[in-house]
Length: 95
Image (tube, rainbow, N blue to C red; front, side, top):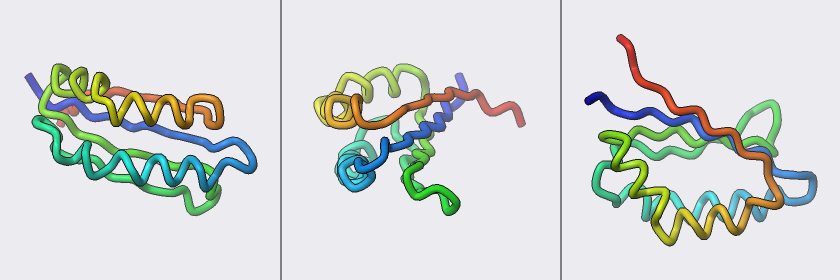
């Protein structure tokens, strides 16, 4: 099975940019420490500072499923779920 690549695009609602950024900053270190995490990098859109992009790579879908059940992931969802729009794209690398 190939790596699972995830592009998570998080757009903070007006006035919530700092809250969303803080919550995203907090999830990076524990996520990087998880078994099966290959990459977990936070980026900010240069043209829209309210938009953040998390680029992730996981060993497989099971590693990502374990990540999505962790307390730090569930806390992130709770913290930003009502103050940001979230789009998750899951990809398989072809070449």
